Image 1: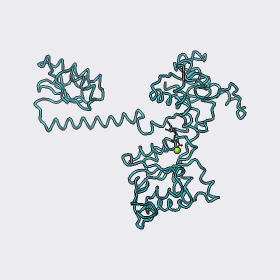
Image 2: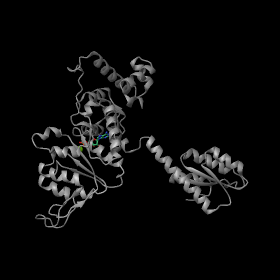
Image 3: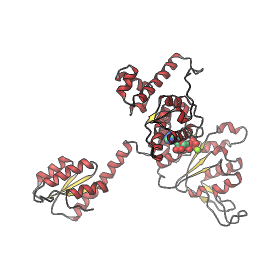
Image 4: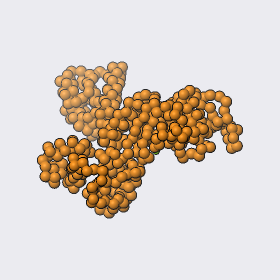
Length: 425
Ligand SMILES: Nc1ncnc2c1ncn2[C@@H]1O[C@H](COP(=O)(O)OP(=O)(O)O)[C@@H](O)[C@H]1O
Ligand SMILES: [Mg+2]
């Protein structure tokens, strides 16, 4: 990409966001001087601070070269141009740009785990384990209620692993009829059964080099569990009706909402298979046990559905906040997501109400299990903070004012109750 003056250079930078720019300081309308070049440099650095600018100067122009570095240029290069040297300088700039971009990505939480929304200690803990596990090939079991995000975790582990560029193949053992599951998983040879017109690969083979996600492994028929165990031990498969062993290289992640060890006694799940699939277990806690995530997730889905449905709903009414916090979320994040979807479509006012969510909000908050005064007080305080924060349109000073405390006190309370989503606003 080539630009002949400041204006066209800036336009091109806006459009193409180049990683590296070479800039001659002698630009029209004043090619004999560096002023236009330096002005362009200043503008580039402001517009695209991460871009590597290599300034090209006349061989006597040391002062301007140094001035350029001071302004934020990456390097300077003195004429006359020698192709090899400039090629080397440019290459190095590209490398450095990529390195810095990678660092920024990690720091700003743009990594795979940033799509697991959540600030609760429980979910952060699960993320930490998942991040470690992602670097290895050990077979991992994700256990947790339906809708807690097991599949999201499985995908995230895959994306954070060295297999990220290879396939991620998911199969739900509960949704495929028992008699078809084996051929779905392991494939079949032509003529293996009526209708087997041509040799067909199974999911395991398709996942070669990548990750195989066995969802609802607890629902795998006991007969097939033996074959699964063999595959996990030997890392070879045999297609249905086949005679040869086919080696496959896959990383296996399993998920279940069942308590597998409880199934041993009734011979519904093989104990030996359990130890194979659960080399590492990650528990994904139910949403009701991670209060800190409820509002955060609700806001996340509000933004997402605002975009999807072209709406611009601002937030939640205080009764909606209370209702969200009170609800038992037996369907976990999936239920929350569905509720937010219909609420965003239905809401008539600026804020979503408990009615829009289809949630009943009851004033009575004396939950029988909690007569512990300290716990009651803490819960009431954190709820009051959330409520005030919403009423104050997420303005911290106003929130403190509404609560009748100082800002530092409010910050202390936010830390104490780990209301991180408020602090980060
Ligand atoms: N931490 C999370 N952040 C954002 N969305 C999530 C999160 N966990 C789950 N979801 C969403 O909730 C829904 C249910 O998640 P899923 O992984 O299918 O749960 P499970 O496999 O445990 O039943 C999906 O639409 C998913 O995108
Ligand atoms: Mg699932």
